[in-house]
Image (tube, rainbow, N blue to C red; front, side):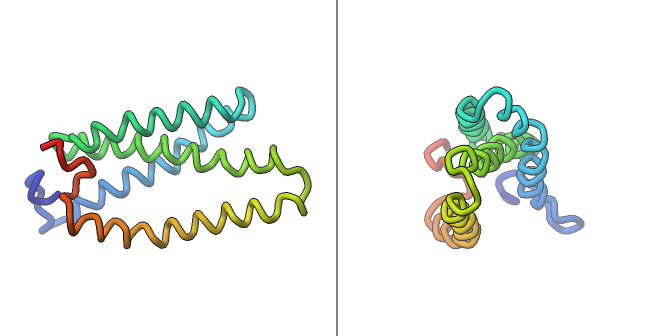
Length: 139
C-alpha cells in the first residue's frame, strides 16, 4: 500500500490507519445497531449488515487513494461486526436455558478464536500470490 498510494512511513506509521479504521468501525457500529435487532428482529439485521458489508468491500478494493480506503474500511468493519455480534443473541433465542445453550455458545466462541488465529496465516499465504488488493483483476 505504501507504494500504491505514495505514502511515506518515515515519520509516522500511516498504514496503521487502514487497520485502525476497520477496528473502530467494528467497535462503534454494534453499539448503535445491535440493540435495534431486539425490536425489529435478527433476520433484518443479518441481511442489512451483510449487504452493507459487501457494498463497502467493493470501494475498498478499488480505492483510488488512501483516504477512500480508510473511510470504506471503517464502514466495512462496522457492517461486518454487526452480524458477528447478533449471533450470540440468536443462540440465546434458539436454545433456552444455560445447559442447552452451553455447547452452541462454546462452539461459537471456539470458531471466533480459531478464525482470529488463522487470519494472519491465510492472509499471508494469499498476499504472497496476489496483490494487497482482494480483487486482483480490478487493475
